Amino acid sequence: MDDHGAIRAGEARPSVEEMEAIAKGLRRNILRMIFTAGSGHPGGSLSEIDLLTALYFGVMKTDPGNPRWEGRDRFILSKAHACPGLYAVLARKGFFPEEELLSFRQIDSRLQGHAHVMTPGVEMSSGSLGQGLSFGVGCALAARADGARRRVYVMLGDGECDEGQVWEAAMSAAHYGLDNLTAIVDRNRIQNDRFTDDVMKLEPLADKWLAFGWRVLEVDGHRMGDILSTFKQAAESQGRPSVIIASTVKGKGVSFMENNPAFHGAAPSREEYDKAMLELA
Amino acid sequence: MAISFSNASTRETYGKVLVELGRENPDIVVLGGDLNKSTFVHLFAQEFPDRFYDFGPAEQNIMGVAAGMAASGKTPFVSTFAVFGMCRPFDQVRISVAQPRLNVKIVCTHAGILTGEDGMSAHGIEDLSLACSLPGFNVLAPCDAVETREAVRTAAQTPGPFYVRLYRPATPVVHPDGCDFALGRGEVMRQGLDASIFATGVMVATALQAAESLVQEGVQCRVVNIHTLSPLDEEVIAEASRDTGAVVTVEEHLAHGGLGSRVAQALGRKAPAPLEMVALEGYTESGAPDLLMEKYRLSQRDVEAAVRKAIGRKAG
Image 1 (cartoon, helix red, strand yellow):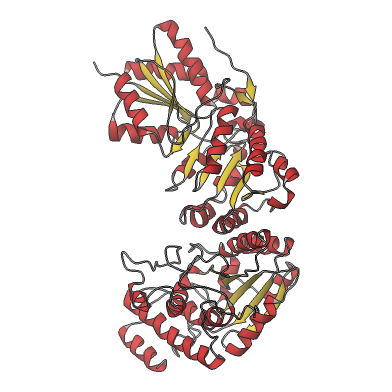
Image 2 (cartoon, helix red, strand yellow):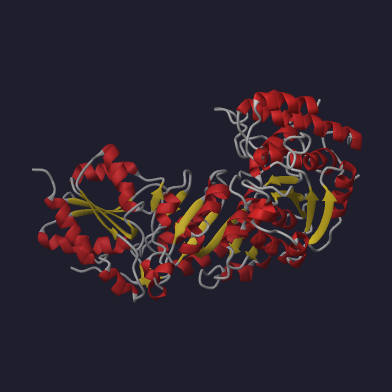
């Protein structure tokens, strides 16, 4: 079986229900990390986590015991401030011990405030928005040059699409016909300061990607079964890159964080944390 | 008395050596930004069309793509003009290349005011400062076409990020009989005990000419070619400073952050001495390169005056 659903280390692919349960546990870990650190970005970590769970547990070939395994698919978190989500899923996969999650943002930790390659399983150092898709284009070009079947996935924030470099990269991916590249836009409609519509209008976002020569797929970024089938569709693209615009809710899973710009980049208080953990119990 | 040199093009030499390297190493790929004839990477593109990628003038994207290719096992060379390969995409170089220390080689042509008539926007006079500010980056400014060949070969064969600075016009060949290039080691080109001249890039030729001329005044200068600005050869600088007690730096770049600043740091740490800097102090203008070099005080005469001044500042 080589349908990109294979999980390399002999692990069975979890069911949709199991992945939903995994994602719930990862949400708790995201909040633990950010609460313990006293800072971090909960909103975008919670909005992306169902997508990340699907990728790591149902889509990508990885080898947690050998993070640099050459045949692995590549995942690039361009919106690197949302690294608690990535760290949570990497730890759950076994790239590093889950206990290490609580060292997030602390001195001497491998878990930096923005994703860096010092963390096992992290492919790209980032933290300045707009750079990940270019990196993904480089990975995809190299894979094609090597005749390798590995696929490349790049997670972008919607606010990140304000960066001009995203569109330079988008143009080049289509120019080179990179059908081994899939971008995911975490369309949670909130960026650092405010709602994306108030900061800089992105719509019609799908039309923009279409105009840049991409195949556009849209999905509810919190419906696990739909996410998995959309990734499968993306992997079947031919001759052009694909983008999945995932409608998500910022802060998803915690009532008072949902759709609330205040939790883009702020840690919960003790009281808020306890309330959130009860909701996610 | 006056010494003269024949001229050769550093960028044309680069284009040719890149083709040789391409034959030797199948992992080398080249990324360009719509200036590929000017940078001479079109020679590589002609021989290896499948390993050459043009991205148009989109330098932010180019740096990120290069990083992704390096992270996938390739050895990418990125070539454009100095202002577009270091000044414009500095954040992409910082985040995507320098912080993860990826194996990306940025080789830029058309550096400095030798780019001449195109004017100040085209004069990359901050590039060395920017490149040297990046921890772990190897920063090379070869002094002639002969050294360019060795510098580019070294960059290809040494893991890690490199910035290499080349020129538009043909420049003096100060190594007509070849050179021994050692990364991170200054090259003592002339011995002397009255003053030390540290020069980089095209200004090495000017420094040698000034040193020769000063012999008439009974002044013997040591001339050191600093082709590697980072990592800097602090030992050769300290030794020359101790031996001569007077130091002059010569560069076709802003004093701030370039060779002058680098040498000042080394002297301060290891062997303080009077220091004069022959360098640019600000933005310039359009004009013929030789006239710009005169007007903005980068001529042989300016080097000679700086040497006299440094010697005059020696204690006692």
